[in-house]
Image (cartoon, rainbow, N blue to C red; front, top):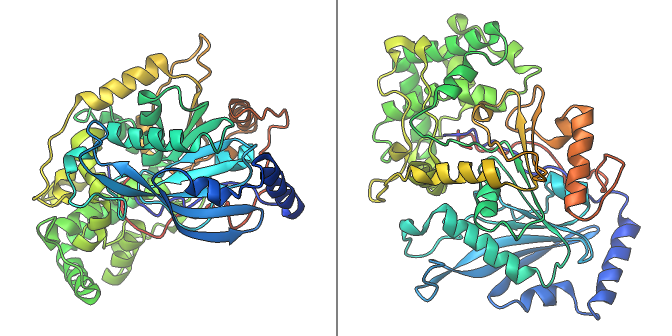
Length: 471
């Protein structure tokens, strides 16, 4: 379950025709709160502290830290500081609660639902991602219930300030996180908008991914990507020497995975997944080189551009140990067969245990994802899932309850990858999804368009620079 984490930095939000609107909003907030500044109200919350405030036109943007119990079942047994950000628009507007499932960005940005409803945005860092990690780290306290309870506790702390309706959202692992939060605390949010969320219900049954990779795109494109993989493994010796030189130049090591050879193969075997997950469908196939005629350097560089040779070094893995730990204890991870590689693979598709330091014990709990999937299928209410046609993680989707007043939906954006958004849906579905999100947030509109104008900085849709395959 490794995912090319060049990954959506931010999506869509408001700011636009806002210099007067932003001033008016701020003035309105001051009046409603009796002249109390929003920063003062936030810092009056017990356990809340300011890291920094950054200016942004039409908003207030705060980086904060909030004291959380290490173990919500035993709150007296220690605390840690959890990082969050607040993009403040107006306390009279709805609020979007976002988590990536990883670290939090400390620069102002908006997720797509925030732009759609023209609201505030609370972004929370997932527990155990630095600096939001207890010290010492008791890894048994990293599970989806503890993380959902972090969200629940933060929501209850902020709800007196942001009293209008709230929506939860997230992308990929963040979309999973929003789902788990709703499963455990279904009364907190007015709705959930989950993007490209994997749903690996039975960890040992991954044939859906194999079937997807056997049919995605065109036969010609699939075969060109597979040929690059084969050629990289055929040229294992010269490319491994290049990787050794690359690692030495960058001060990178391979203790966690065990050997450079295992790390080399893991990157190559991820290439087919990473290509479909993140490459632009309209142009990427034409740019796949002819493997047989490539120089060693060109082959090395192409693999790096898709998966990143640093992905399975100790330095590349360390920031994402919490993800791999969760993948190997609760979330599950796809294991894909790649018959076109024949006997060229020495290790097979490697499991999450390979990517977690051995001093951290792991035990998989197979019932956890089955419980969530069953709840979503039968009890989900006001939950929306958005997937991309070319994204391998869409092979195993969440299937929320439909009909009977459940008001839940699954949409697939044509030709979209792991960056799929509501804006990429076909027109009728885009209008429907936008209308439902606005209605859930208590700001209904018949326009079928976001309530906030696009802002090139807040709503940029580029992918993140890290090149590591994970959700």
